[in-house]
Length: 296
Image 1: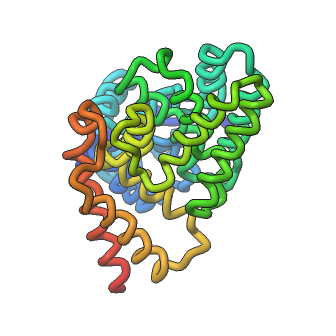
Image 2: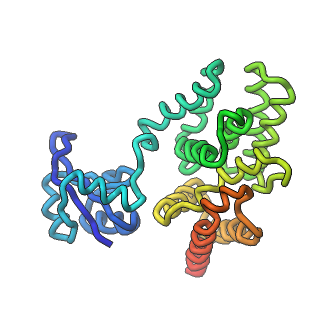
Image 3: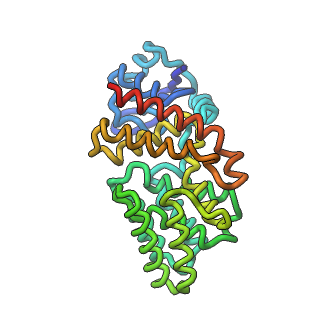
């Protein structure tokens, strides 16, 4: 692992800041920053903001000084860069634009859904997850040809209180209610609700292509790079912060083991090509870490 830092040129809070990044591991970036005594609050999704007076300390501790353009190239090549559209200040507007381009007559409903996905108790099932699911759908099908599938993606975790089964059913009920208010036919409302319920156990009917796409998109996070997967695992754990490790670890292992026991994690041919191999590596690694945690 190598740490990199650019010159302190970014003004804020009465001083200027450098950006500190890793080329391989967010976990190691956190460890390096902690050893320097840099506050966790200085972490901004893929880098730390380091005040000018700490630049020399970072270099002395091993960070390699590079210019700003080179640092961006390194971060992009690492696969850990968080693009602007995924940053909190941009996510809501990005998602509103997506909703309004697909459902231009229902801007009011898009606003409600963005608010629901922005609830402060969400760590993983938030706006970033919603955008990832929508982008994964784009990778699998031509979304504009599947409006009910897209609507189901927007509703699939619209209710999220950490109650497995109940959340999905209430999200499906919300879809029926709101789409009926928007003038959808009863059959269309029921169709969207059925798609939402496919995420309950991630076992879509073999003859339901849209349900297979939605489930694959929902699970696509499993097939991401190591740094993204580790962040996902941390966020899931944070949503159950009220559950002690001794209870969380075995429950999580059981869920992940059930996934691995399936002949295939993904149901579409394209989803399998994109995510299957990496997903199995990631899930096995998390199971091993959880089992080790349970033994401590």
